[in-house]
Length: 204
Image (tube, rainbow, N blue to C red; front, side):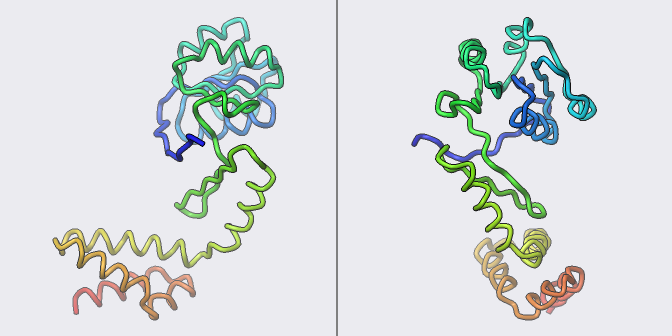
């Protein structure tokens, strides 16, 4: 298949999006939320995207803005235009919504639960199943799982300051994961008491 999942640091990167339909709008929002500088080429200028911080430029300036960009997203139904922009974008990161395999970057279905991010990629076989799998994952992940993540991070930071042995730190983190008292605190949504409990255990 040739694809492998990666997370890109997009802060202050330049992203050019061709098209402002459903897909173009969704990807514009995503990259703006990630801190990128986003320019959109489209005939109409949706006010909600302007309000978010997207810049809009005319099609006759496409070459200039492809050159400016670090990443080009092609999201129109105009196959002739898509092909032209893809040619201009050779050597750059390129995401094609129409023919993903003709680009070199996939923007997967992504969602967050707390600070945990999930990405689903079906190899282009079924966007519908990507949505269905997302729903199933969201049902499985519980609030206490997210609180456990926060607690693990809290404990790791304390252990790094007080325990040099990495294996001992890892063993202690597993102990916390399986501690019945902690599990009960987290089931009740009581993260602060779980932290106090851990501090007491470490003192002892």
